Length: 640
Image (cartoon, rainbow, N blue to C red; front, side, top):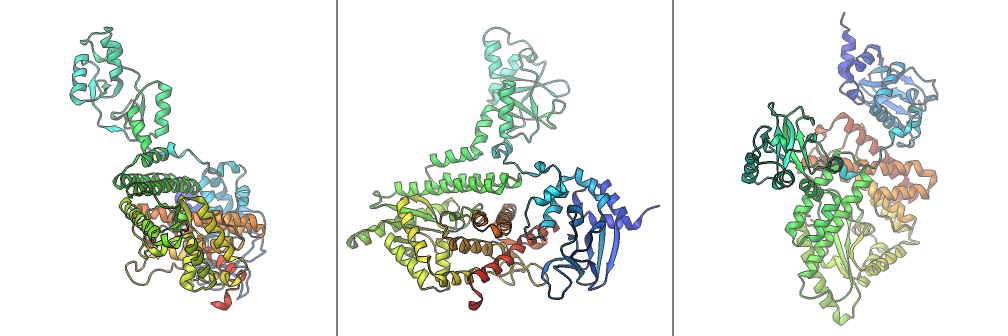
């Protein structure tokens, strides 16, 4: 007899992570053993310190609030709505509950039996990883490895290795290859190769399946030497057996296959075997060309380039490389290092081209500063420009002439960067603006003013410059400027208080009822601003905290939090969770931007999956805690 209730449970569970990746037969077993609990508003499902249940839970309808205890004013840890999993402690640890679950409204929840579920964890590791992340996002340290140890004995399997990124790039091959029948004569093969200007033919049998390959090398060694006549069948001189591979073959795999099999040609077939038809052919030349799309190949291409047109093509190739890295799940730390180095090399080449086009060499030493996401080494997608120029001090009578030179140079650089693909900054915060092209002493004076005569605009400007990175030019000028800036912030509590206030100005990502707060009007109405509402609070928070420790050598936001974890052991877990959140949000924004050919800043919420919404909300948890820390540490409340 059909179990109607189990069918309904199954249909519900399969829509939500991690149940959506569990095999059908296993999910049916779970559905058949689920318990169903109806909770009136205010009903307690379990309390802090209660003995563990035999189930963990998922919300079917309504909402469940997770609090420190039953008291009305107890701290709210999380609010779970439809599809949210909670009460995972019995599955992952052996101790009592550390929070209280109360129905925020009438709610229906499914209890997933732990004994039925545990065997599935042994088979589906991704299920366990999702549940660990879900569980730990409701603890003090959302990203500790401790719970991986509790759930899995073999934790080594959970570690993500830093794979060779080039190996993951799928190689391009020649499609619709030329073929010849095994019984055709060599003379016919030579004619066909000559007419089509190709260096090889795939030899096929009566079923049109590949059995060998005929190349220029075979002609040189077997025909030109007189070993065989041109009137013998090609099967007598072909190279065999044929080496066949799938169309997903990567660059490194192709290289290894050619070395291992001592061949310069690989045949691509429908399923990768010689039992299906050939759909392409790959040569050593193709491998060399494909390496041009690797990081090292693009770096070489940048250094050889002579125009913005060439660099624009390379910039587009960098985006394709980024796309490959993101969708192959390469660790973000590796991705940002590679893409930053490529962006940096591209900018340097633009500056070199601009210098070559100047009528004379620079009159004094100078440095080009990259600001914003580029300065923080977080620029993955193509965004607008943020840069500045600082030049050596000169006598007053030479100043106007020298500044004019550098403004002309900066204008050329900004225009070339625009042609490469970087939009002009809408606020004109670029080196071509006289305000952003100044002598060393002028910059020192400017920073002193920003720091000691603070208003909202000054805080914005100074914040941007605390993230600068020297891209090109004299190191000593930049070091002297940096030393001056940090010296001006010492013994200046008001500056940090006002900087803290500025860091709290970004709007919250979530409303009171835990819904995403979206833009209310304008071009991006009803879209979620992931930059302003999620990334900037974390970026601003990392900046003020690291500056308070007088650390000036770390600009990257995730690295700042990791350094803070070392400096403040008591807050280590929290800072590591902030670092993780930054990486996750940058990756999410990048992935979204690549999918929709945009900057990834504005997210269409209805296009997100339930899992994506859950991951974003977990990242947001750290933002409110971070802002509370800043409010207390820098005594910001009196200025709010």
